[in-house]
Image 1 (cartoon, rainbow, N blue to C red):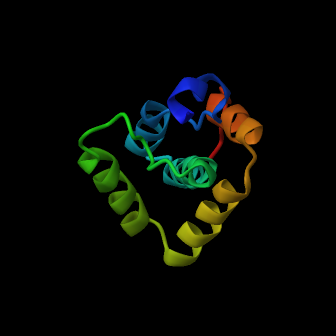
Image 2 (cartoon, one colour):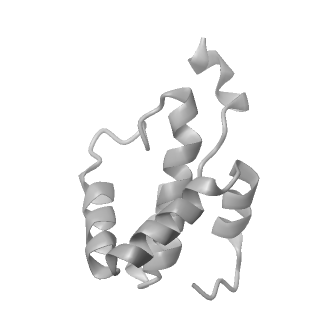
Length: 100
């Protein structure tokens, strides 16, 4: 049962980390992390952020970031995030001096 195995499921970057990156104007970084989180959760058939009963904040943040970046940039950084391994995504999320 998946619920019993929560300790072995991949952990995507925290929604808080993603929201902070977006609110600080680091939209490329946020897009990479959103892409990574989505890709990490897809194989285990978990909707992004299942613990959140109301995903409207996340959806608004993603939509605003997507609208603020050029389409080519959004597509590129989203794909870069989706290509990250869980370990890469976590390291990227925890970088102290991220430049983008």
